[in-house]
Amino acid sequence: MKKTFSPSISSVDFDLRQLEIFLKVVQLGSFSKAGEAVHLAQASVSERIATLENMVGAKLLDRMGRTIVPTKAGELLCRYAQRLLEIKKTACLEMQDFLGVKQGEIHIGASTIPGEYILPEVIGGFAKQYPLIRVVLTVADSAQIETRVLDGDFEFGIIGRRSPTKKLLSHELWEDDLVLVVPSKHRWATKKEVTAKELADEPFISREMGSGTLSSLEEYLQRAGVKGISSLRVIAHLGTSTAVKEGVKSGAGVSILSSRAVDTELRAGVLKSLKIKNLPMSRHFYLIRDKRRTISHLCRTLINFLTAPPKKLEPAKTFHRKPPSRGL
Image (cartoon, rainbow, N blue to C red):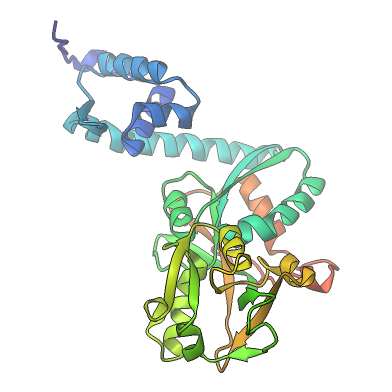
């Protein structure tokens, strides 16, 4: 029997938890993915959406093949749901600030290099100073981190390029050098530098599209008069710096990576680093956050920790930091 809805203005009602689940289904286009995001079984998500539809008195979602999309009524509710949940979040943050709470959980995202080679040590130091604040770190490429910061999944992100997105505030954090790396037995291993033309003729292992490292490399190659990454003999695009390193170590090709990512291999003599003639390559990592969203007290605490002048560290581990800008 086909289910019908009998809308009645006086009977329209919902709660914030239902709206949170509804928004996740709309954002992810899937009951199962939404269930994972809100820590509920798929059946429970479906049940709560059905309850919400009955309370509202209208069908809110349509199945379009394997994708779930909002109906016109769903689109209307979605707009208000976003506002209501943002108000709830702001109220919670204001209460935390008022009470001076130093306990809770912060969700942040970072691209591969800062996420795998810098932040673990930094977060360890933060945990010693603030043992009741948990930091949940997700590592992905720079493009994904930007998207998820805008979607509100992360309070802030750290990526390997300055974001051009006007909705994001960017603050320069740490300096990073890019180096050409080759296996220790490669014919270039005894050299200090090679030309861009020599590099163009060598099998090259690249990071994946969306990577901050690849984006920086593209810019530097173009400055050198080379037609970007397309001018190289790219034999593979790999998803992580670790995968690229393993490819280089196997002798499959050479690559350009962050000096931080290959520090251990360089010290062990497994890999050798070179420069590209007349092409110094350095960049910065940037802290990004959505300027439309209210920053939490806990997030402010972590940002202040990240942007504070570094204490005495070993030279190899010294992070070049910029003071926090007012916009953050």
